[in-house]
Image 1 (cartoon, rainbow, N blue to C red):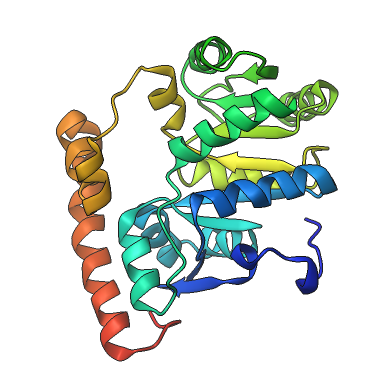
Image 2 (cartoon, rainbow, N blue to C red):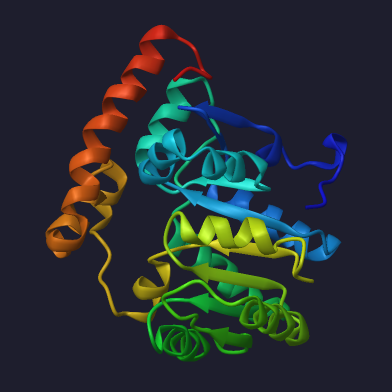
Length: 265
């Protein structure tokens, strides 16, 4: 991954709050969009981890995932708990950079500026459905391609074909919807093999923007209780995740703040 020197970094790239061992950028949605557009202009390959409490907690026991986050061009605070933590750690210029909102904002800019978008991930037919919805809602949007990988590890030959297809597409942005940690593994292992300046792992944003799943009401999103809405929507799939992550993150975050060690565990 090619990184610009510190003097050429946007403040949102430099400012990072260490939250339970993961360096999360302290920035706003507008900051994030400006940085992605800068990367497109520079043609400098980078990936973006859209992180919530789930990714931070998983990174505590998965050293590879933690290293991937900390090597990312950006780790944006997708969840309000990370925003609350960053503010308590002294970073005032920070707000939620919600994956679906970042995708909507960049899609609008892509439609007006000609950025080419590739959609990689989702269940059968989802990437194609997403592309159809977005080209309808954002006239002028250029779709470089779509690909739904099988629910298994690709063979080396299949992986090489994916790389070739994306490179041949002329994409400026690859939106990756594979869920955590699979999408982070994929971006980190492909960022230097793709001729694409921006890879963004947005997980469930594919479903939200395509209209196959509903988003939580705004008041739940802003209060940090979106997890409760998602749990109520998909209890069988998500109850084990949230039963572990919510209390564990709350406990560990409180301990970090009480010990006043910004990089503490």
